[in-house]
Image 1 (cartoon, one colour):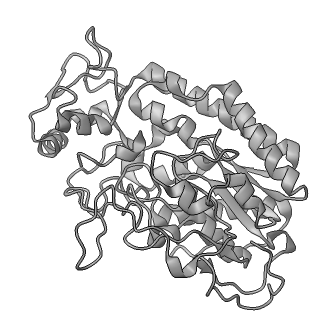
Image 2 (image 1 turned 60 degrees about the vertical axis):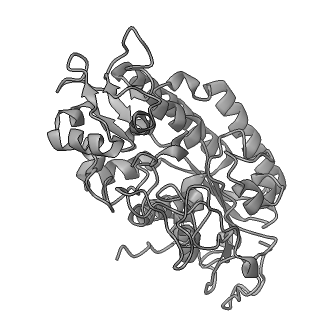
Length: 408
């Protein structure tokens, strides 16, 4: 648990679309039957970690297959190659919340956050359809920039920008999910002023869309809004600190007796607390003291603490981003999908999402059924929900008849 959120600091057109497509020369490819509609002849997905298939603070071929983009491509009946990562991954996902172990191949040394098995060498193609890269912000899709030292930008894009790589597939349809990381990190840090400004976000986003449409002027697609960062269960409530079992779990995770400031952390305090604070306490970088409001001696009560006023600030930032994205979608004739509608519905089905009180005694589902072990990234079940909500938006906008993804 002490390392859970280190990551918080995601075709060439084939004329033979009427036949099953061989993937012997491709990165892992969705093998399809005839395309459902001509607008889906070549689908590309631009995005960050969620689109790429990042789960539980890691990514490998198994999690990549569960991305909503892969699910959507299957329903479209279109070729869809993604940059398949060899097992156990780069970096391998966490597979036990309590021990923080990661996916490890039998007979191999235990994986760490630095393990990278690179691409599947026998299945590499020059043209991919999922060009999403974990960690990107709004400025990055038009740049050739390595993110967070992970090496994934080079592994996935081969020295090209995300937009340039997408255009190699001669796309007829695209989904674009960019912007989450412009605000998520600062929100978890408790420093929302560090989010990308509205003007800069709009300029970055406009530049990305302009480049994309310049290379594919007849493109159709969906622009996807930004998730309300304060809704991620990586931020737990101050009320959780009133629960003895929760406090005991924090003590066990850090190996220390954490003092909860009774003045600022009360049953009515509206503060959200970022899980990385627990990592900081465990490492000795932060005293074993949690205050739920700013104190005269920062960083106590400041770093990784998102107070009520800051939560409003974060919400306003995201609302501003989404207002711009929707207007951009309208202006270019694209559909718009607000992922917060999906997350609100899922919160009604999962008490962890609704209450922000994780079950930190669970090794496999501390953040509930829809969020993986890093408290941020959607689970396979959530990706199905996202795909189906996108399908509803696409069908309504374009008069198509995509079938929904089975939920079981």
